[in-house]
Image (tube, rainbow, N blue to C red):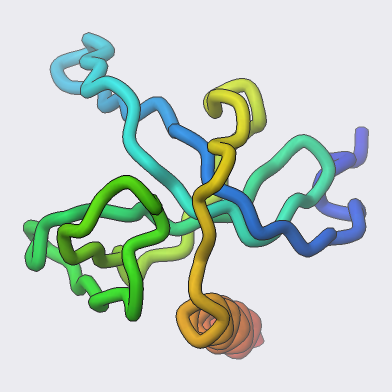
Length: 125
């Protein structure tokens, strides 16, 4: 049986949602709660996104400072994690109204996605 999402057409999105963060440790599911995510593509039942945080560093990862905090009610610096992730729609809450990604940041995230997608396809050959 074919995976529907593999053949689904990617649709551009520009929205923020809270994503449920969970981890499995010692065969036990550990929930870390909900964290903001910038969803920039939708492919079938899958959202493609980057995590957004206030932390200027994360363990084993790289963050990039956003030009402007996407939450209009928050003046603190915000960052996005340079890791493109995918997850099913049921692991997200409804869209955050009023949150907006700066166009330059959106372009940078999409370029990162294209670069990683290109690198991934080159690794397969």
